[in-house]
Each structure stands twice: as structure tokens, then as C-alpha cells.
Length: 193
Image 1: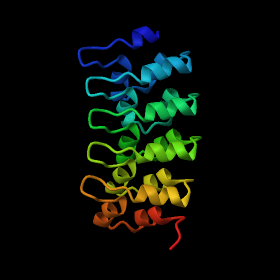
Image 2: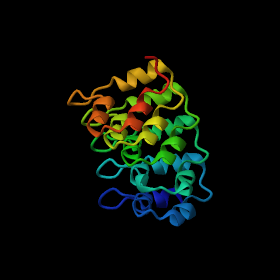
Image 3: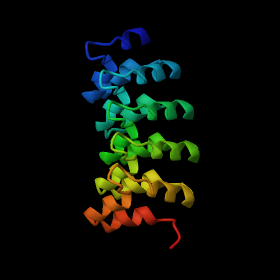
């Protein structure tokens, strides 16, 4: 089954890429049934001609089932590996979930990861030097911002909030444009004055 699901078309997409892009949760459930974690990691790590993985493609999911089906039972190290994969714009799946305010996915993706792994993933910058936190801030999503920073030590939060994109903007600069007081509060929760 893994061999069949790994077959790529002329754009290097696998059936799993296409089912993920079409949000076909039922098909993904059927295809994933009985696959061992190692097989799922292999399938989720296949990149198409835009270097996008099925996890990048699944960003549109707001369905809990889809995220559980794809990542359920995977070890933390495998999650970190998959979440570290970059597309042709150097964007990770976490960048994409943050930009689309998929709080449930963010929470599930980061759940049970060690703080050091979370900081590593949240520090990854795309081709515009934006982090997932920049993406959430640019979209004014206070829930996503809070979820990304949840459980991190103040020093790690400050490090992440100090990161600048190619225009030297921090996540706080991004929020200044929107003026969302709830989102701004999310950035500062847990930090000393």
C-alpha cells in the first residue's frame, strides 16, 4: 500500500497530496487505515514539484478527524521532522496553519512536543524571513498567537517575539497595523512589564 500511495505524477504529487488538497477526509482515512507510523511518515514526507508535502496541502482542514488521521500515533521526533519540511517558499506546514488561523491544527501539531522543539519550529523563517508567529500576527489571529506561544518560558517567548522578517518587522510590528488589542494582549501574556 505504501508503494502505491508513494507513486508520483508529472508534478510529483502523490494520491495523498491530491486527497489532502481536495479535503477528502474519507479517502485519507481509507488510505491510512492499517498503515504503521513509519509508513505514514514516509508518505507525509514526499514532496511534490513545489516541495510541498501532503501536510502542507492539508492546511485547509478544519476537521479534527483529518489531523488525527494523518498524525495520530506519530512520535514527537517524527512530528518535528514533518513540521520542519519546507516548500519552495521555505514555508513549513506550521506557517500555513498559522496564517489560516487553524488553531485546532496548531494545538494538535505542537501538543506533546518538548519546549525546545516548539521553539525550533516557531523560529523557522520562510523566504521572507517570516516565522509562524509573524503569519498569525499578520492575520490578526489572537487565538493562533496564544496557541503558538502556549506553555513557552518567558525567555523563549521574548526570543520569538524579537525575530524580524525581511522588512525588519517583528510580530508586534505586524499587529500594530491591525491594532487588534486582543491579539496584542496574546503576545504579552506571561511576560513581565
